[in-house]
Image 1 (tube, rainbow, N blue to C red):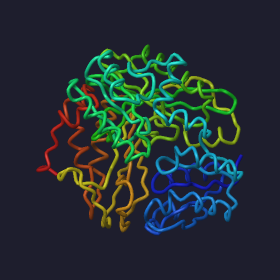
Image 2: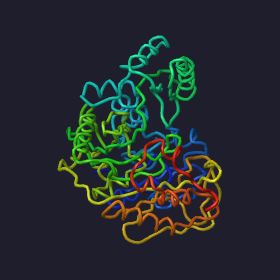
Image 3: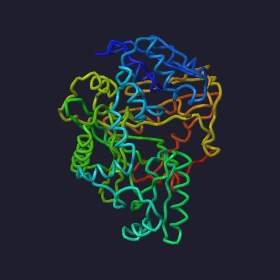
Image 4: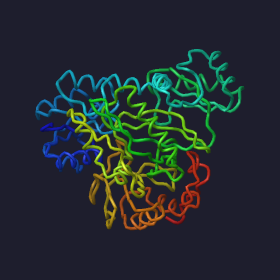
Length: 450
């Protein structure tokens, strides 16, 4: 087992990893930019090293500075968290070359699953259901038009190196295809430095359901059930829950086995998430794989009683994961609390928190690096907390979340708490009858009752 781990990240996920390190008796090293010098992850780590100014490219994305911090503190491994360098194959490779264990998959695994076209081809070989579409990158608009006609409109054009909703174009009619194809390629090149795109059939009114997996260096891969991630805005998740309100035991077993097959296809190591798009009849298709810990991992932890970060560290150290099927108990919901103003199109709201009261009580968990007096920097993602509740049933979990949201007081900045409070009373959410377009097309947020 490692003696010391450096966490190459910031905020709540850095603090989350530090807590598990402490429970495992492992020393932790925090890195931080000058904008984050007062963040809780800096305070609670055993050691902390400043790695640069506020811009990410000069700090959290600057590999030489992170390696230098690991060297001067004698860290043996690096946990990348999520975002920043977590799915950077080059960073994984460089860590290995410097005798630092990257707590996550190998560079080859990251590259295989990070390139969407390659990932899709890998899944086809592993008998994992995929959305009908091109076999890989489509290099000409003429070839793309033929494929679109064969699979039938609507279709979606996706950048192979895309993410976060960028590099995607939905095309409903053939006459709009050429312009969408060219626009998508240009955007992909501008955002990702790679203009490769592929074509897929667009599934109407889909749900976004993902399966959590764990793998080790001994060839073992297990799944820990699903997470419902359909409540999104601009392709960004806002609320997640586990299990999905529409899942059946039979579909869970099939989807879980497909996720295991995906992991075994690349000899996966660590925590990963296989994401599926699911239609109204619960037919599921592989969408992508995230080769890291997810923001929403706590909802899985709360229903299977497993510390996923601990399992990541054990796997990275060469240990074996448990191969016994994980039993799902109860229901968990996570609300992402962002420093944004939902009354003004979710405008970012950086600034100083003047009052900060977190909810408590039975089965209420708050993952956050913020506190009263904390200044939210404008340089990074706006998420400042995750509120997670669990209960024996979904109905009880919703009631507990409503109570917890009422107790969560953050003053000095605008937050998404009022948005979540109204969502808890929404008929579509309460019934579980929603899809990935629900928040933007059907949910009516009333800014007058904040």
